[in-house]
Length: 281
Image 1 (cartoon, helix red, strand yellow):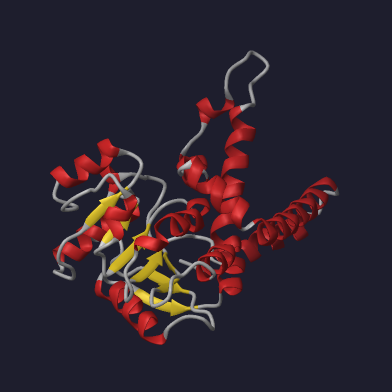
Image 2 (cartoon, rainbow, N blue to C red):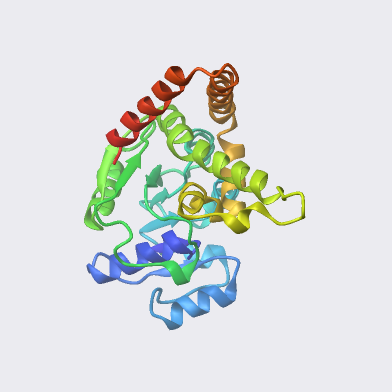
């Protein structure tokens, strides 16, 4: 197995596979040599070639764990070195443009299956990795009409073997759903934190100095990796822009309700939110 991008998701997958005896050797590749050497010293990976072609040429399975904007260029750079029969998957949070771009680049006899393991959190990097990151979590696979059925079965089996429940969606279904339940909430958390971070009292005190658990809860994901989330938001911009419009409309409705002093309507908004919240926990 070759893992490209040995951060939280890549290192956790390596640990999970080693702990369960799912693979033989694991190669790691990435831009940060210090990070790769640390992963090798910790025995998360077995070796870390400096050359991309060298890292992938003997792999039976390649897992792309880098930001979504890098996935298609990565495939372009390594395609000629990948041997026939190799399986390739990814862990990206946006599927439509990525899967379309990669499918067009796949060499003859090499098989790609889009994956999105729903795991991780606001902490990132090798240091946050754990062999149990994927246990009891969901993994979305996004086959297309071009997807090889045997490859789909093998990639699904990998995610199941590290403890995940595998669900199949189309790329567009995936991007709409996760635009709503993941990408929009991150935008809200970033925007709220930036709004409050700039607010000061008349005597110049930052209002966040008085924050409690509620603010920490709702803005926890504002600590997420800015580069990764920049790429996700831009890659899923069509769905995300529509969702932002819907969210702004709801804020306007609540603002109007407060402005006219309609307590019953405001209570109904909050009760509806309570009901929806209970349905997802």
